[in-house]
Image 1 (cartoon, helix red, strand yellow):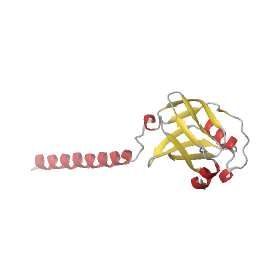
Image 2 (cartoon, one colour):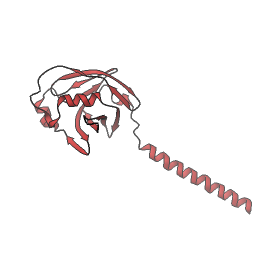
Image 3 (cartoon, helix red, strand yellow):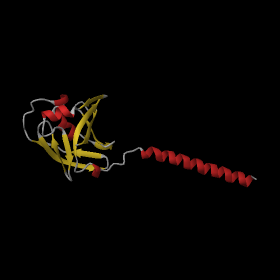
Image 4 (cartoon, helix red, strand yellow):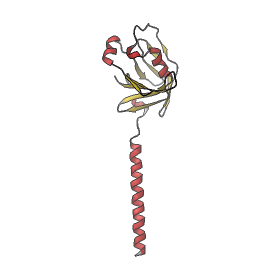
Length: 161
């Protein structure tokens, strides 16, 4: 009888360990499994900027009407990032490793911006890119985590074009 009780206790212990392990596996399943190849070669358009508890949504209809060639876009190629600010084209180097990213200083054309859509200055957009530290894909949207001029985390959220 004692031998059967020991076997039952052992079985209960193993079963409990399996239940706990499956719960832990469920938590990690929520983590993003995205790889940077999911980002490469696609053009992304800025949808929102989140900083210090404030979200600025970009009105793409208004923005696209003011900038027929697009504005606040980004595209990653093998070793270079490029896109359109507002209104200038830009490009620069970048490196990526797992979820970290480093975008070098961007160079751009030098056209005069006649207005600043959504109160986002082009040079601020370029600064956010140059200060990006990590990236992620959430629900099909590219998120670049950067800092603003006061050092607060800023998230640029891009959608596919």
